[in-house]
Image (cartoon, rainbow, N blue to C red; front, side, top):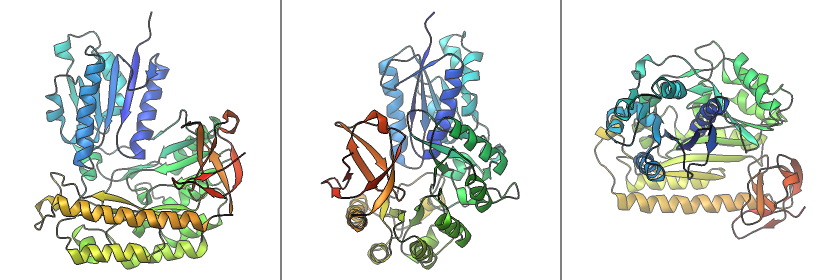
Length: 433
């Protein structure tokens, strides 16, 4: 008897990847073969994202691609987009399952329950009201990579005016320290050496359990087998001094921070309903660099938010230029139905948004190149991954500098001390073993 094949496609954040991995493991344990999304499969699972309009378009394109690869396959769309627009997704004749933010973890059971029904009866839509989602479902990624994304928190209570995520994932909730450390030990047993802590707003960890993020990282630091931890995106108002001090003194938590900025204009930050001003953000950067001079600091920035004047954009550009961040992830503002920002006046044209985006991307590239050049002739520990690209494999230093060397399977999942000497035209250090 042939085993059924299932293929997964994940859009969006690291949190989505951790959840897809947990769902795929459930399929594997129940006798399914997990194949590449480009292959012919019996079931296609699309874990959706709704942060931008472009993410929504990509999800809908993936539905059509799945149907072309196998018109007889079952197609499931799960996650954030399913939570927000289930009725619209239901109208796609190719789609058989539409499962929301919590229900997606029950996908396999849904398939089993109606496996023998008629095609017409197999349309299955299930999304709880977002206000009814209260429980936390843990997950972590595993597979070919040498790092694991460990989900410690979900949802958000911030309700920034541009953001749809609270309406797609619900209120902030998190795992317990006890269970998070238990999962980290499971990951360690798989031989994975690096964990990335993920969530929607991880600095909010533990408030429903009378615990906090600082207490969590103190416990994770004690676990044997995990050699490296990275903290994914953490809000500047929740990145307390005690967290920075701890990372600076830890041998496992790496000097790599991802801190959302969104704008360098206090006027725009206020319109966005952010919980800090640019002075607080600059203070966090200064504190990190004082204790960890060679640390990597990435920042998210949104351009073209309603009301962003030329002067506001210049404020953002000059602010980013003046602070010691490594690079910026630049996002063009994407209007999302249901958010407060949708109702704001003074919308910015796409032409201006594209121009501003290019300027910030160029600035980011200059800052990143400068950071890489600052580290020439310094030695760092590199964890090499299993990828191969044109005969090369890649890895990252503690402070997230990309390094490549000729592919050698013996180096996969190994941490090697590397002296950074040769920077190629792609701004990647080349290491000769």
